[in-house]
Amino acid sequence: MSEELGELSRIDGEVRACRKCPLWKGRLNAVPGEGRPDAKVLVVGEAPGRNEDLEGRPFVGAAGKNLEALLAEAGLSRADVFITNVVKCRPPMNRRPSRMEAETCHQYLSRQVKIIAPKLILLLGDTALKQFLPDESLAGVHGRRVVKGGESYFATYHPASVIYNPSLRPTLLRDFQKLTELLAD
Ligand code: SF4
Image (tube, rainbow, N blue to C red; front, side, top):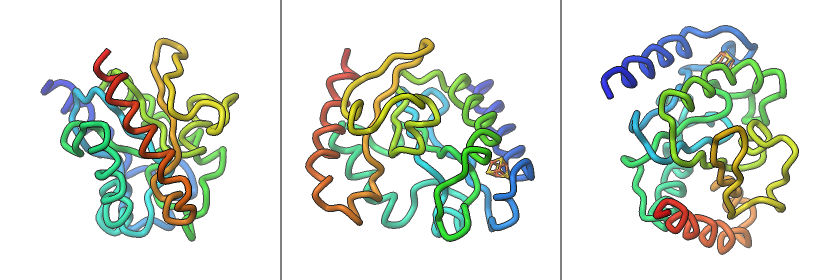
């Protein structure tokens, strides 16, 4: 476990100094991710927002509270998982990261996946889905396990989508409840 911690903290350092795509120009803090190095679930969102950029931590403020409530539906707490994003620096005006930005930043995410070796990669929202399963749509695969290239994925809507579209909340809750069964397998 200390070896994994060391490798994750090496990635932290690289991300905080990274200037490989234009997003570094607008950041206050890069947000490499945080959590258990041996987590069974690796949570992947889209990108840091304003609060995350201020604190250098993923899913804080309202977004963090939403995520924590959803994780609880799956019998998980924040302390059980590792949380990160497709891109580690905040896009201007919280726009969606470009394909180039996501692809450039993927080197860090793919190393995090290898080190943590989670049982399940939880993809939150379309940007995270497309990063790993580019041929799938959220409407088609949300709420079920998809196995590809030796990894297990579980996609659902981004918790922030509930803020703008409250009708998605029951679907999100059901998807997170299904996680409990998958993790018990
Ligand atoms: S988003 Fe990723 S690739 Fe772009 S500057 Fe930040 S850490 Fe580097």
